[in-house]
Image (spheres, rainbow, N blue to C red):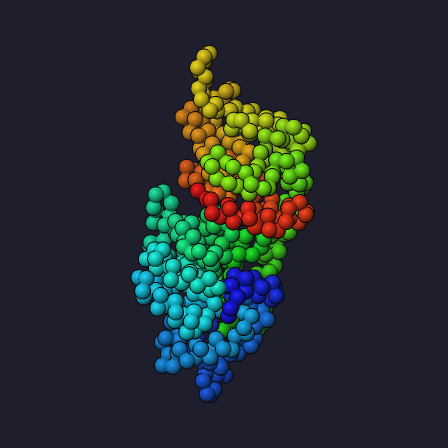
Length: 473
């Protein structure tokens, strides 16, 4: 088990066309009769499951509690691990969490003594309780975030600085490593939590228990948690396979159900970006509105990408395509007027308003020092519903400023539509202010399309993704 965990996982996912993780949680109370005469009944049960599913599963997940409860449990666990093909990763479900020295011992036991590829860990002790595990560069660590049990709400949803605790875990925990080897555990029984975690951690792999015996809705979970590339989730199922009369058939049925749902939810990037969207991405690149290289930002940071959507005004066709994409996102949002954010979004908002036949206002960045001294230009009525139009969102600061100005004038503002979400915290920041962001596209989707079209290399895209991950907030 020497390869980096997520590389090994993705190889197994693609080889077996599967996001199904098979749990190996042998409870003697449920031992099938056919194994009762075996020399080692529990081991024989596990071996049957492994042999039946080795070409179906993307990984296996033994829960160490079931082995610790047996007289010879650790020996059975070692023999079970030996039966798993080398190219299929193993996640030890141990939920470890302790102070540094004890955590180091737990990590050695899991990674050096047992040789598993990954482990589940509790975040309750903070970063220094996780680092002993995550410092193993070739191993994975899945941190409990929002679990599948009914009692998850007792602590995990408690509000902290205006957001539930589990979202703080989702945002912080993936950074408790120097090796990009951390995932999160989020239960399928709470699809809304899955969606919220995915918004905060768009690229993180999620280990998802709760499908099967716990009653989680498979399709709802996948719709909430899949990444834009159709990956990023490991669907764990234990009892529904282990207790089936035919474990192979049960596993095949589950894998096929997962893949059918994936296909319905996530098409290829080109198919997802319906109509004018894919051509728009290519046109933005060809226009020079999206550039790759080294750029010094106002903050002084060096960025591998620079986006200047003000160039849209120089290409009437591109501007029209962008406006049509905005109009598509707006069709299900109730509103009375649009509000363009100065200055880059004003031309876009004007064309969108013309397309939809809807009136436009805009909040000034500063009040006029002459005339009527307005903070908002254009006519509007009290208590009207306003949708903010912005071109690009990074941290969301410009939208928040516009929202405050509009709300101070007695207007209702709960939605904003943007062309590009840079995925650097703006969506979450606005959500905390009661504003839902509807992005026409995410920057990660743009990168995928540009790579597919040969406009940029995969290495350039990865450089940008790494930069975005390091510069959230």
